[in-house]
Length: 138
Image 1 (cartoon, helix red, strand yellow):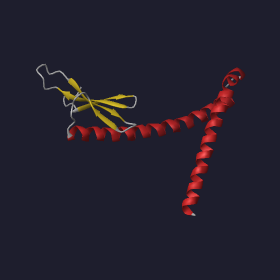
Image 2 (cartoon, one colour):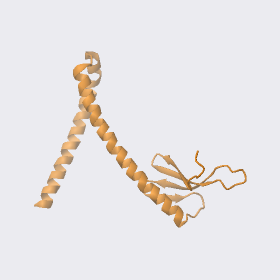
Image 3 (tube, helix red, strand yellow):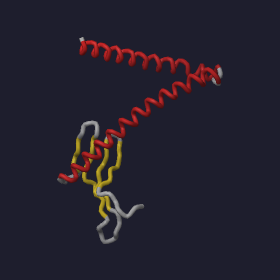
């Protein structure tokens, strides 16, 4: 572990994080984690923990973390979608070259329904975008 610790630690949770201020300036030189806030990324909320008041420095550090986290999650989401495209391609190759009849029987209906649902959503969204672009240019 490095000797220089950050001032804040963010424990990621389902939709945000718990924010701790780190302290090593105690008589035992142990790392103490003092919870100062809870973050809800979806709502954009920062709630001080207990009866605390957050300083401008606290808020600035938390808001910077929130922005970085949103960016990271957006990147991960796009990566997941692109991986899904790869998986669809690998699934097509598997179905064509290696799948047994029993394996195909097990997955065909589920895959067809999922692909039908996805196709319906994508076609509808594309039509909406084209209509909006036509309206804007027209």
